[in-house]
Image: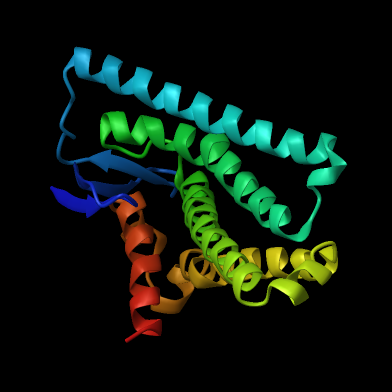
Length: 215
């Protein structure tokens, strides 16, 4: 059995997957250990909770985005950062959590290797962007207190705000994205080797790259 940790630090255990080549040469995942099956009542409870979470996250952040679009008085520099945070959190609820639900309930990734990479890139990108946006909002609040006069004079200058918003997304992608996308090429592993435990392997790819950058 393979033990991995999700983004919240929760411990996950899943059965090992091994790739077998069929007659056409395609890679076919074969289960050598049966993933632990959750009791039916627990699957229902978790499904209801996760679907509820998706609805709340999507609806709440959609309202923030709509308010920004409809009310032009909200379009100042500090609120642009809140818009950026709402967009990243909205996408987490609209894409990352729904795609992760089947894996969370079954302990197996069943959506294919391509979507696995897309999900990992999006998950790390969006979660990192959310953190960077919170840091940016905190820094903006700091400037509003320590440099109040200058900050108020530049409050309606949105060009700098847009530049910082774009920088958040670029830095968030560069931190994890290349490691996940190009991991196979960098380490020289074959697809068959990397297919084993699909999700945790690419998860480790991202984590390992970040550890190398900061050690």
